[in-house]
Length: 153
Image 1: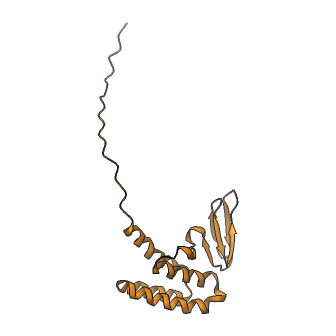
Image 2 (image 1 turned 90 degrees about the horizontal axis):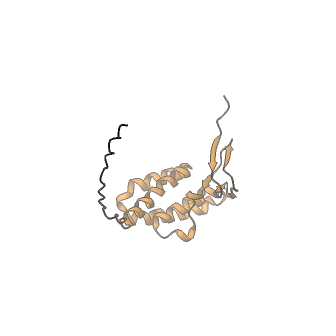
Image 3 (image 1 turned 180 degrees about the vertical axis):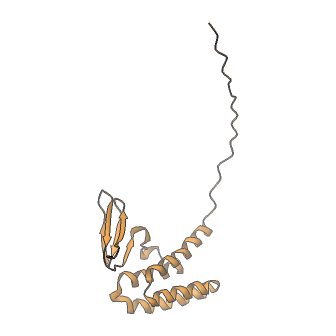
């Protein structure tokens, strides 16, 4: 049985990074099939350096660099170690999670490490966000009209 390719369906205007190359999608949805191993991130998974305002995002960003640019992995692994230790100091209660992230990166399973890291700052942003104001309760009373019986002829 031939190997099953990885299929990605992308929306119009979406961007994708494949092995370090940025690919833009045109005006129509596109299906891409990958028949061999590729390192890819969809546009919504890509974190820009200017948006790295927390240690969790810095950790995600350095793993992203290791994943997308394997030719620079040795240098980025040094930065990863430093940022990971800084994250451990700031969040000692997340030691098990950071151990798992380190293991995944050392195994080369960077995509899973990114997904795990993403949960860290998604949860933090949700917790820090002010509660959405609730709309006022509006009570509407409607009278049901009972239709008059039809007049018999």
